[in-house]
Structures are given as structure tokens and as C-alpha cells.
Image (cartoon, rainbow, N blue to C red; front, top):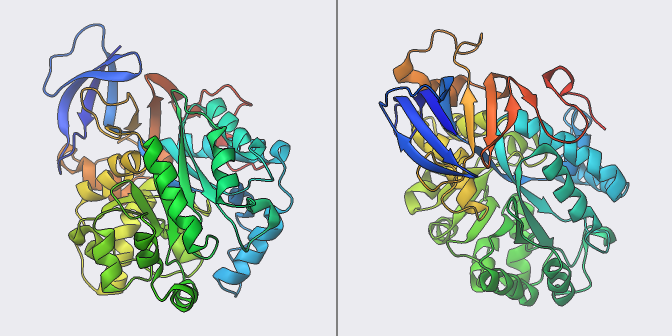
Length: 421
């Protein structure tokens, strides 16, 4: 397959013109900027970018959308509402919720999802429902199966870290699925058990994620139990490494920022602002060496362009400084940063050997019409949204064409994308 891109983002602050992309099977075989247009190439108008990577998702929480956002309360009162929803979940109920969530993601240009999964229900049926939903839609999936041993609901918990490992070993990678590990949080996993999870992940070359310092109360409880912050506790447990992604990292001390310079950090601004979590120190983390990525988390809003620009815009509010991150750095977080976090090495780039995952952003929509070609990258980052996504390819196959998902499950288009289960 040959694709002739009017404009394509290859990693710089400006796009390249007339980029020929050759695809062989599920991978990119060649990328040539400034190429003459071969007769057998499909012409892609607009801006072609790598597939967007949603590095942190709780698909079932989409069912809370619009029900928990208004009024007073806190993260902790929201959590009680989330628990009430989780108690109703069965595999048969979860499948259509996850399918609708992933379809909304596909329509928004998301080609790989990191599902931070803790609805275990005593086995893998829930996880298998998530895997089936992703396959129906056509997106890649990294199922980050969370070790959860104390607190929460009984359906979240395994009997022990050994039981968790045995259960997760029953799940299998495929061409479009990766099985990863997660420590739900230092609240949910004791220190000794937390040491086992990174060992399991390292033995399998699997990604490892954890919720970290989302709330001050989490920090206080961890200091009381371990005498360390959550980041320092996880570092002592052997979790913090280049294969580790800290999710949220909203309330950090200086030592935490230094430690996370050896890892990745996933920011979820639309959820963090919805739950009044706070604003993470994204610039300090990046300058310390952290690789940033983004996630839609609670599905309050599914739009990775919004998540990416919110890293910059929220930090402006917190610091009074503009220009903490360049458009290319923000787009990198939403593409390659997420792919690497989720174990798809080399993904999220338009480059030879990369997975053939890409998104075409329409520059002639009411949102972006009139954008000069040299400004297409900042326009996409700071002005585009899910509505501007025209085509989406995963593994060399179009899963969205002209704004409609071509997955194998029940029909779903922009006309009914707001419908829930």
C-alpha cells in the first residue's frame, strides 16, 4: 500500500510536504518526504500524524460521564460513586461499555489503549471482555492488569500477589494485544507484595504502571506506613525504571521528581481537573528526564489533543509562564510517548519499521480551515479535536474512514457517538 500525504508530521516543529509512506503488511516500509506522487498511491489531504496513544484508561468509568461532574465533593466522594458502578459490572455488561468507549477513542484518532484494569471479579472474564471489545473496534490494546490486594471492593482484589501473578499468566499477547502489569497504588498493595510485581514485569519484558501521588491524602498515608513518599516507596520496591510509568504524579516533592526522571509519567489533565486533583509539574518532570505521555483516565472527555494541550495550558495557570512545552513535545507525548509506555516500542512514529498506525487530521473543517501548512502542527495541538479526525489506520488497516468506525461490532458513527450502553 502506498499513501501520498499532503502534509505529514515526522517529529519536527513543522510538517513535511508530499510525504510518500509505503506500508508492507502491518508495518511502515518506507517514508519519503518531498516525493513525486506515484499513480498507485492514495492521496491523503490534510495532516497525517502517527496514531495517538491513550496510555491510561478505565473504560468502565465512561458510564459515569455526566453523572458525577456537577456539584460539590472531592476525589473521595467521586470514588464512592465509582465503587457503586463497579459493583454492578459483569462481563456481559462490561463488553458494550468497553466497545463504545474504544469506538469513541478510535473516532478520536486513538490507535492504542492502555487499559489500567482492576475489575477482576475473581478471574479473567472481565479482562477478556476488554480484549474482545478492542478487537471489535480494531484498536491495539495493552491490558495493564493491576495488582490490588487491600481496600477497595472484593471484586478488585486477588488473594495475594502470587494469586495475581498466576491469574495474569493465563492471559496472552497477540499481534494487537500486550499484557502488562500495574501496581494499583501504594494504598492497594503492601510494600513486600509491591516488590513482586516489577519482578514479574521485568521477566516478561512487560510495561509496568502505577497510580502515584494523585491526592495529598495518599502521600500522607504512605509516609505514615512506610516513612517514604509513594514514588520513593515504589523505587525501594524496584518499580521505578525506564519500563515504569507513574500515572498522575500530581503531588510530588523534589526527590520524587528526580526519581521519576528515570521513568515515564502519564498525565490525565481532563480527569485531574474534573476531580480537583491538581496540576502536575510537567515541565520539571520533563527537564529531569521523564518521558511524558497522556491518558483519558475516567473518560470524562475522550480527546488526546485536549489532553496534550492541557499539559501546557494548565501549567500556564499554575506557573504564570507560557511556552513550557513546544507543540512537537506535546504531540510526542500523545504519540510515541504513549506507545513506548505501553510496550509498543518504535510505535507512534511515521518511520521505517514502525507499526503502520496513523491518523489523518482534516485541515478543511470549520475548526482548522485556513491553517497555513507551516502552522499545521501547532494548530493540531492547540486547536484540533476528535471532530477533525478523518481517517485512522491500525496495523495497515483502516479502522476509521471519513469519520466512521469500520470495526466488526455493532455500527457506531459520529451521529451516535454519544450513545451509551
